[in-house]
Length: 140
Image (cartoon, rainbow, N blue to C red; front, side, top):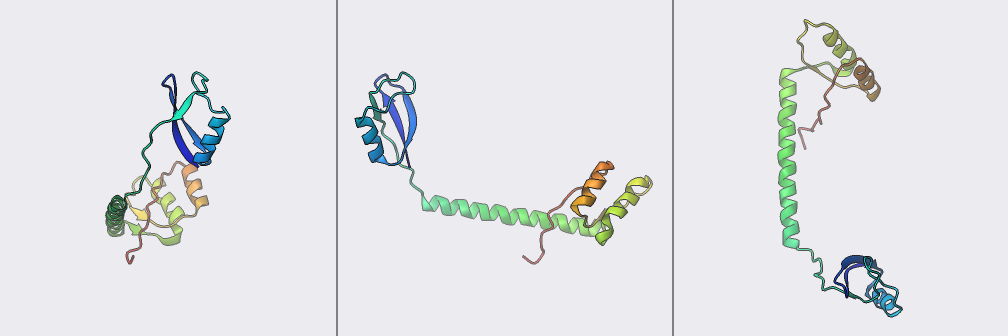
C-alpha cells in the first residue's frame, strides 16, 4: 500500500491510498480518480517526501526508553522498600485483616498483602479502598 497526496487543478489537496504506484496510474488513465471537494477528474500526485527510518534516532530512542524503564523500576523498588519497612505483611489473610483495621476506627495499622480479585471486589463494595502496587522483583 502507498499513500499519495493528490492535488486537483483547483488546488484542493487530499490523501488517498493505492495498492502500488501502478494502481494510481491505471485508475487515472481510466478517469476514475476525482477530487473529493470539487469532483474534477484533473488530479495529479503531489511531490512527497518518503518516510525513511533513521537508525541513529531509533537507537537513541531505545536508549532513552531503556533509561526511563530503569528509572521507573528503581522508583518501584524504592516504593517496595518503603512498604516493607513501614507496613506489616499479613500474607494471604489480607482481606480479613483489612476489614479488622477498617472497622476498628482506633487502629492506625498499616498493612499489606495479597487478595484475590473476588476479595478486592467485595472490599470495594464495602467501601474499602485498596491500592494495587506493582511488586517489582528485587533480583531482576
